[in-house]
Amino acid sequence: MRFFTFNYMTYKGLDAVKAIEDYGVGWCTLPNSECDPTDMASDYQDYIDQAVLADESGFDGIAVNEHHQTPFGTMPNPNVMAAAIAQRTSRARIAVFGNALPLRSTPLASIEEYTMIDLLSNGRLEAGFVVGGGPEYYNFSINPTSARDRFAEGLALARRAWAEPGPFRWDGEHYQLDCVNPWPRPIQQPHPPIWVCGVGSPTTLEMCARENLGYMGVNVNTGHADFVGQCEYFRSAADRYGRAYDPAKMGWLTHIHVADDDEQALAEFSEHAAYGGLLTRGFGGPAKTFYPPGHLPPDKLAAWERKTRENYTGKAMPGEAPLMGTPDTVAKRLIERLRDYKIGNVVMAFQWGTMPQEMVMRSLRMFADEVMPIVRLEMDGYLDDLYPDRTQSEAAKGAVG
Image 1: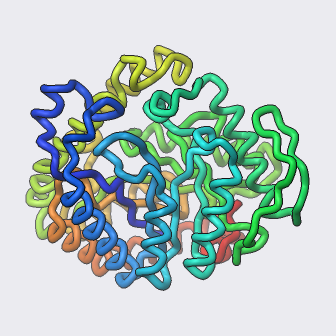
Image 2: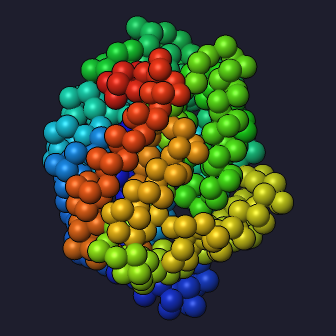
């Protein structure tokens, strides 16, 4: 069982209530005059310090991701942050979940930057790729209707560029390259572990099972039953392609908060959750700014928006026990979830909204010291019994994808 920390790296210096009242949005068109660069610089240092603590505390990996033009997530190029974290850490995997391939003029940009991170971290990179959300397509003035086709082609190019010696020519529908010959090459051969990050699309799950890639479920407001269904679909798809299911090939992102008692944990999280929830306004809104025509069918857009606004509350998942409380409470609830999912990776956001640094660090330490050993022991035994041939140990060395 592998444990990753995760951080949206939210800008904390905004008066979110006033900003939403004034502008109605938290994405794309919220004026960047609302950002104080000095505050953001301080936040970045705090977030890197959190990553260092995770490395020192025994977490298996540290994860970052990509968003654009929003205080919700301030890593328009997560590869820059991954490189910075790589220089402050020594053992944890560096996971980028992920790069939005269709937004780049050529996938070679991600391939080359990822290779540099792998070298800078001495072979610790986990390379994630995403289609990207609607706001990103609005930001870049890119037609989203061809996004999945461009993503599939870009991913195929990335895999070939890493695995096949260059130079070679690529003549695709969306990318035409006379010379594919990326220098340097990664330490991990034929390439770093590849993850496709998604929110439960059957098309994405099917592709990962077919191509033997890792799938990382990154929609934290997906309910328990929904993610159980995604896991079942992935396992059945692997079986259809004649491949034994490997729990190391699947992961799940969630919020976690640990404190001295259950009420304290929920109260602390709730106090800061509203900030993050306010900033999601606009991401799930109906205007073309946030979901340009063609990115999602109308019924899925409406359902996504409704679920987002319901779930970004103190309880995070209505009707379900939150993963917040004492170490015993969190361990029990996390084991229950993971046993239902039958997966080998969990990615946890300890930082949320305006949560102060000392609160995050305390929660992270308590999880590492009092929760992680219990969950790891329980889940390693559980998965070993279910899947005696699983390749979890190899996955930690770069076998995924």
